[in-house]
Image (cartoon, rainbow, N blue to C red; front, side, top):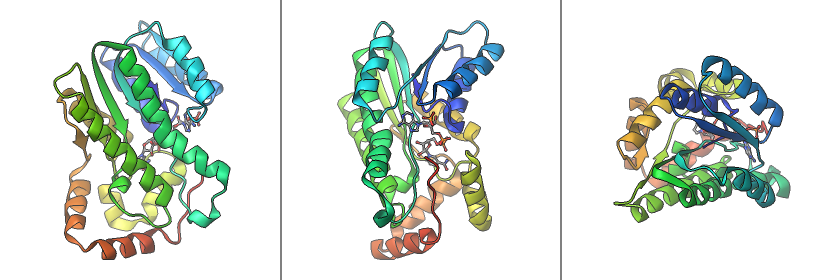
Length: 256
Ligand SMILES: NC(=O)c1ccc[n+]([C@@H]2O[C@H](COP(=O)([O-])OP(=O)(O)OC[C@H]3O[C@@H](n4cnc5c(N)ncnc54)[C@H](OP(=O)(O)O)[C@@H]3O)[C@@H](O)[C@H]2O)c1
């Protein structure tokens, strides 16, 4: 089961799972994008069972319809990729945007975990794509960082609850990833360090699957990101907040 499958990273996960000989159940909001993706994947993996079901993860009733469709299946892997990286000052949000970002990034992922845990194969490996941003206090990216921080915290807690069972949980904390054109443009503007730390979707998806196979509970893909994270832990928290604020103050993202 892969959420956010029509996105750049989600599509990469789908291809890697299919290459491993796994069947896939793909979901995202847009039925058109899902059908187009299925069309491409069927050409490359003609013998695989590739199912699609459009669902807005923010909507409890829509999730119920997906669960009804998938209830006869058992899942050996759940990859929660869907999320909304809206970035702007909190005062510029409206209620709808706020609910959308939190539900698609956090509530949807938790709900999918519950469903797949109720329909596991002999073994179930859960991967929750969180973000390195979730480790920080991020002015001007506050809702995203808070939601991803909560997703990481949940994943690590669930991993402990599942210790010794047939279920493993891995939180993936990428730094910047070359995905949508607006994200690629943003990475370019970050200068040399941004380009050094940014990773391709293939790299992140491959590292995530390997970490999950090894039963790792948390993975930060890329040496530069790991180093930046470790260094940031040594700086005073107040200073980090100010640095994060100055880095984000003049940029915004609202692709949803
Ligand atoms: N790109 C980066 O630099 C970066 C860094 C760290 C973490 N991440 C995380 O990696 C994940 C994928 O990122 P990406 O850049 O590949 O994103 P993306 O291309 O924008 O893809 C997002 C996916 O989520 C789906 N989605 C969004 N809202 C949804 C909803 N309410 N219900 C169901 N599906 C929904 C979208 O499909 P529809 O539009 O059809 O619904 C799409 O398939 C996200 O969780 C993101 O936060 C990204």
